[in-house]
Image (cartoon, rainbow, N blue to C red; front, side):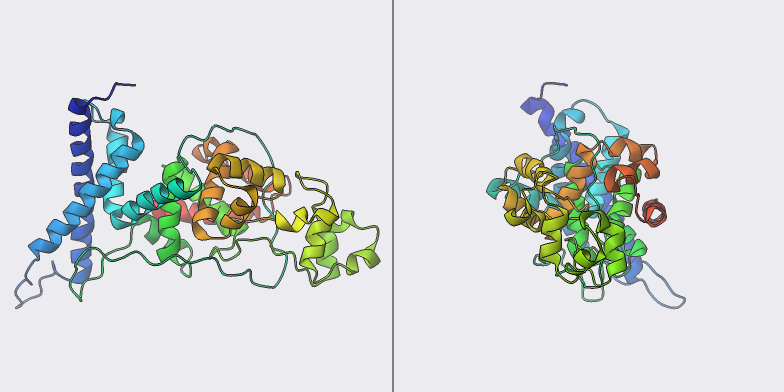
Length: 366
């Protein structure tokens, strides 16, 4: 690694800023085309171009590019021009406000509670984090952050295009609220090394099964209404069907029974089963897994479990799991079967759906 000095850091920062400006310029041109500013019809004159709007967008691109360079490490660009890294900076510039907001959100969050930095040191292999979609009651709605402010003073008739990630997510799941999820995912992807299209697509494929295609199922639904489904999933935890029937429509009681004395949980009376039921985009489950995650982000374990119920925490926990469980090399090899087993266990529930979502996302990103 090159030693960074002021003389090498400043040119590297300017290079990243210029690359970000290129990305934002591309976005501005695409936006103008979509708004009709560059369309010329027979007999009509071209509409006037707003120079002030272009300057603002380029400034946004410079800021996004600079932040991306700082995130990746200025030593990457000191005295050299790495093509792949510069393309990533151009992409950050194109994302513009989304990337800037995600970067500042991560800094603010790390200052007040969890650390979500890119250096995940834990490398535990294996583990089952997923759970089947088991009920007919919709999970409680996630905490929704305030929408990002519109910084670019575009004219009333102009609608800026979505970020590449937001556009791809919208293609795969039209009902997904990308105003919430695109920034949350972009932030988590940046911190946990999900930089390539394959890694992002494989992650989204798992997320859209674990948490539903609209990411509305951020905590495990244990309210079973039919005995057959309950016995199919948790039958080995009951001596017979008569006992199991007592747990229908009793999610707290059921969780404390089926997750007792395993996954780091205490006995039924401890309440750990329900307290540490599946949460997040990958459905972390059990006190041991939540404890590991909590220690990594420097947060009390019960608070970490609750944080996984809102978009930022759900995205961070999902990406943390994929990185620390060595799922990213499997995504690089496009080995979606083994990746699904790493996430969901040998049952590989809804494997075909996970693969379909992953392929659709990869196509949308390309």
